[in-house]
Image (cartoon, rainbow, N blue to C red):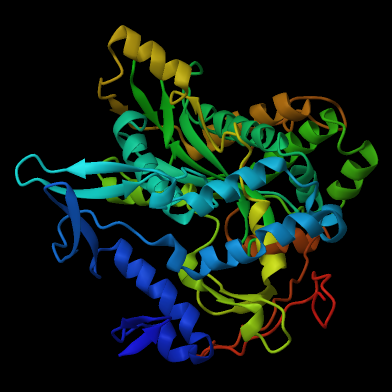
Length: 497
């Protein structure tokens, strides 16, 4: 038996308790909170006996068990440092992370009161046996409150499957931008909505070029994520997209099974055009970025998910709006337990292969940059899945109609020609117009054999021997040494006095 404060706790067989002995108390506290939320530890319930309430220990694991957020290391970290963070923000973080948003303090205060019976609760009573328990109010804050955000994730996944997505195949699309442009989105969060529109333009044009019905449109749910693995600001987009287009008569035209490789160029064009229109970049910046060998833009299209694979669609829906951090992967070290008197957060990467140590202030500073604004939308719907389209179908009583799936019989050659015409509309350049005489050009063959490709490129002096980096060494199963990352910290080595 171990002691957590004045509370006796039985030993819990958790992997990180056996490996991170130095941080035993914080890890154990976090683990207990998790077990409570999954109803694996007893909690206090209330039974009404006349006018008096007596406390009894409940062991019925089939009923709701209230959580205890104050026992978590994350709660302690926020409670101990949020006021200091506000006080030093302008001096330490404003130049790198933008101005302090007053709404952040509203979110923090609401989180600290979340699940606290002292701030109000619902009284829950059983009419059959008279048993009662008290259910504390939740804060409903996005990203910052792990419990409330996780509930939102589950509800979103269920709602998307039952109210938005149709019984057709879907794919995941991911759009990312180069580091050079991320700061504009950090300092002006309204650009995130415009970034979503840029992605939708690429999706719509690509899929419309793959079907014969030019009035047909795809459906997409696009979610904005602003965070990387260690809470660095990395705005990117995750989308659930129909693998084809819906026609006005309700039929669904499947997209071809092959994927073109020049989507990144179209996405780059859309983003740079948008940022120039918004006054964020100039022609000189665009010209410089277009000269890069690797643009930094990336478009990923995942494997097809069939319409009857509801489990995979549900997992994907929950993934695209997941929380920006995980309590299970953080360990909080209070200042009084730190060797140098500075509170720290040890955070483990998602693949469990890397850890970083931040000062508590630096970690919280990164975290609050991912709190959405009060009325900021993080998920948007386009095309056949837009709010307008769904509203019109519901009004007409056709929203529940199961679409007829029409296979795509377009050849690869025809699709590429359609795509060339699309590029002409976007860049105002026709790739099938002769640059010398302005005559019409046509595709005469597709070269796919590697030896023929090499012969042609060598003949034209375009063959480039590419050297690959040596293979990465195999990572052992042992836990890597903890390294302290103070590169972004402005706290003096001796701490604050």
